[in-house]
Amino acid sequence: MAGGPFAAAVMCMDCFGDDVITKAVRVYEGAESDQYRCEKGHLFGIDWRGKPATEPQWPPPPEYTVGRK
Image (cartoon, rainbow, N blue to C red):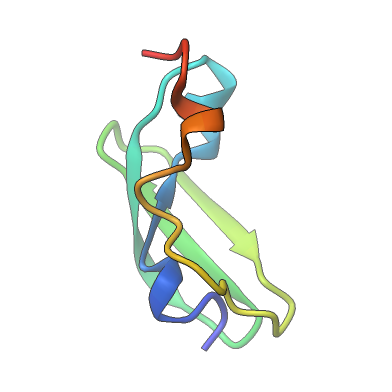
């Protein structure tokens, strides 16, 4: 369950650190955390702690995308 259906795709945390918005898709769904891989190959996890996303995580909202590549 982890992030649930709204968290099937998220923004890559590694790319976001470089001010780049890249889509990452879930490659493993766990009980409390999910693993994601972005289009550039970064692999990372998100710990949802039993609180799945309540709204779609992709595409990200404008406050995250304005001024980024």
